[in-house]
Length: 316
Image (tube, rainbow, N blue to C red; front, side, top):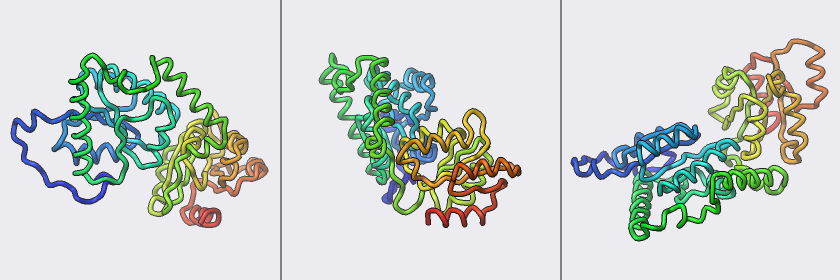
């Protein structure tokens, strides 16, 4: 079920009239698991369709599917994700389609700090399937009633988005993100905290097989996030708190030492333990890595016992 909670509905037997009256729900977002679960559990109540988070795909789905509501399933949004959401929010406004978001309280709070990313409906998890169905249905009905009573006042005007154009929206979004990145206090308050029950570990490596291997080792005890480049990792770290970073030493574009240098420039990020992952069996390069004073290094292929021992040493 949707990390929703209990009280799941029993299957409904719909008449042809019921089916024809289903509201259309369009889903997108980074949480593929949440989207899939929503689709499986809510398809009896709504006519559901999913889209990628690519801007052109989102626009095409709106044009051809004509949803009654757009729901974004939040998880580990990057700067690029937020730019897309902000731009697409303007598109939704022009079509009088409301924007909703599903996520935990930290994700929803973070979105509320970004211009034009604030949803008209926030669905905070956990929530039972029946409650979620009722919340979405009531919201769509109220929205349609509002449009009927204010036919000459489109949603994009009635809802104060504070953006007269996509250009203004992106400019405000960039300004907000830059302020967060410049101001340590704002950046720290904007970061999504870890679960109190599980440490979050970030794996930065351009080899996805390393991601899968380490997630397989750690998933039962830790929350594992992954990034395929240093730049993506730094964006992620502007929005999420982590307890430990496992960092590949050799990567294209931005290697491990360059990433570590950037981390050390930020007072908050500089406190996060970093362990280098390296397949290099070169004594001089290992010495160079250790000269950067990481909290440790592990040779690839990473052995499960060695990895767990290092993690326990640093954060448990």
